[in-house]
Amino acid sequence: MERYDIRARRIPDSTIRRLPAYLRALTRTGNERITSERLGQLAGYTSEQVRKDLAYFGAFGTRGVGYDAASLADEVRRILQLDQNVRAIVVGAGRLGTALVRHTDESASDVAIAAVVDIDPAVIGRTVGHLTVESLDRLEALVVERNIGMGIIAVPPAGAQSVLDRLVNVGVRAVLSFVPRSLAVTNPDVFVQHIDLTLEMQALAYFVGSTARTQS
Amino acid sequence: MERYDIRARRIPDSTIRRLPAYLRALTRTGNERITSERLGQLAGYTSEQVRKDLAYFGAFGTRGVGYDAASLADEVRRILQLDQNVRAIVVGAGRLGTALVRHTDESASDVAIAAVVDIDPAVIGRTVGHLTVESLDRLEALVVERNIGMGIIAVPPAGAQSVLDRLVNVGVRAVLSFVPRSLAVTNPDVFVQHIDLTLEMQALAYFVGSTARTQS
Image (cartoon, rainbow over all chains, first blue to last red; front, side, top):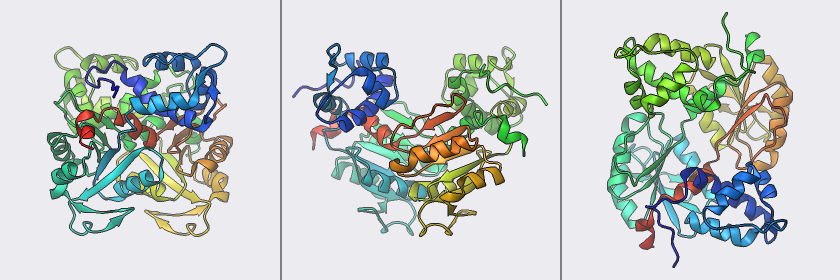
C-alpha cells in the first residue's frame, strides 16, 4: 500500500492544517469537478493557496476544468490517514471533556473517541455518549488495548504535564491540548496542538473596537 | 486616555495572537524583571520572536536585564484592551455553549460572559453558571442593554450565518465561532476567529504515525 512517509514531513504543517477544510468542501461538492477558485471559496482560502497546497501531493487540476472532487477527497483523506481508523482518548471527563466526547460522536471527523478517563472516583463509571468513564490509572492499558493513537487532554493545568508524559511514553504521537498552559515535549515525533480558549478570547478582545467599550 | 487605533491595525494579527501567551507568562513572573529568553520559554516562542513582537508597541528590554514584568503585563493588557470590561454573549446553550460559559467563569481571561441565548424553548430559562439562558429573539436587545462587544457562536451549522449577521448588524466586531462551517463576513471591521474541533482532529490524524495504525 502506498503510504506517505510521516517522518519525512514533506508536506508543510500549514498545508496539512488546511487539508481538512478542503476535504469538507470536496465532500459537499460530491461527484463533480471543482475549480480551485470554487474550492478556495468554500474552504475560505485563495485559489492560489489551494493550487499550491494540492500540488504538494501531486494533485494538479486541469485548466478550466478543475479537479475531480470525489477522487481528490479520497486522496486528501488518505494523506491525512483518515482511512486508518484513528482512535482517540479523552483525558478529563469534566464539562469540556464530556462536551468533546459528545461533539465528536456527532461530527463526521473520521476520528473516533475510543475511551474517556478521569481521576475523580465520583465521575468514574458515568456514561458519556457511547462510553463509560474509566480510571486515569488505566490510561496506558486503554491506549494499548484499544489501539489509540491520539490523546485529547482536558484536565486542569496541574495534572496536564503528567498526562502528556504518560501518553507520549505509551506511544501516542498526536495530542490535542485544551489546557491553559504550555506543555513541554522533548520527543520530536510528538505533535501537540493547543486550543486555549482563554488566550483566544483575550486576543479577540483586541478586535472588539472602541464603540462598545466607550459606553461602559 | 492613550488609545491604540484599532482601525489602523499597526500591530500584525499574528503578533496580537501571541500577546495573551506573553501576558500569562508575565503575570506568573510577578513583580520582577524577565529576559526575552525566559519570556519566550514560558510562552512557547523564541526570544527573537518575543523581542520582535514587543518592539511593535515600543517595549524594549534592557540588554542583560530584560523587561519589567509587571509594567509590561499592564502594557499588554492595555493593548489587548483587557482593561476595558469586554463582555461577550454566548449564542447556543448546548453542550459546548454551556461548557464555554462555565469555563470562562473560571478562567482569568478578563473577558466576561454577560449573556447566553438559545432558540430552544426547553433550554430557555435554565441556569448556566451565573446566567439564565434567554431567548435568541432577545439577541440584539441583550447586546445593547449589556454593552456586549464579543460574540461566541456555538449553534448548529444551519443557523450560524444568521446569528453572525445579526451580531454584526447590532455592532459586534469580534466573533469566536465554534461552527464547523466557514461563515461569510462582508464588513472588513469584523474579525471572526474559527475554532473547528472536527478540522483540528482531522489535521492531527496526520501526525498519529503509522505505529498505532498498523496494529489495527
